[in-house]
Image 1: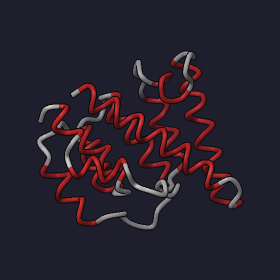
Image 2: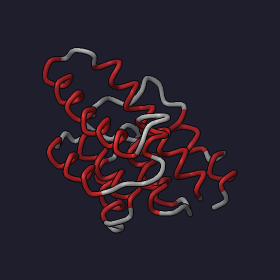
Image 3: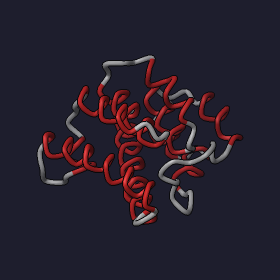
Image 4: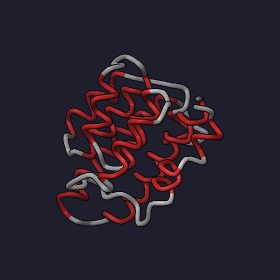
Length: 159
């Protein structure tokens, strides 16, 4: 599927215009009807996985990401899915296992990959604390949405 065609698809448009942002740890899939539509896209595995993630479909994301274990973008998606489940330890496990050139763009603009990974690790702790205390949830949801949509944009633009 061509990048332009993908950007203009109803599925991508629906997910990117979602409001309010996705919860830190949703209780279920946001729009069940989008699951089959995402699966039917003729886009690469990572694009379909990130779209499932934007739709709060952890199983859909996880199943696809797992098929490409060792691919840095798949492992990145894997780490976010686990953080949102919430499975914080497992999220940090996956953060330690991958690296790619776009991490600073997402987590520490102007910084290094090492700094970006440190920010990712800290964000897991921040989310865990917010989920426990209820403090700052809205701000962290916005930050998480920016993280996921930046990654989705990168993956679609790499298509």
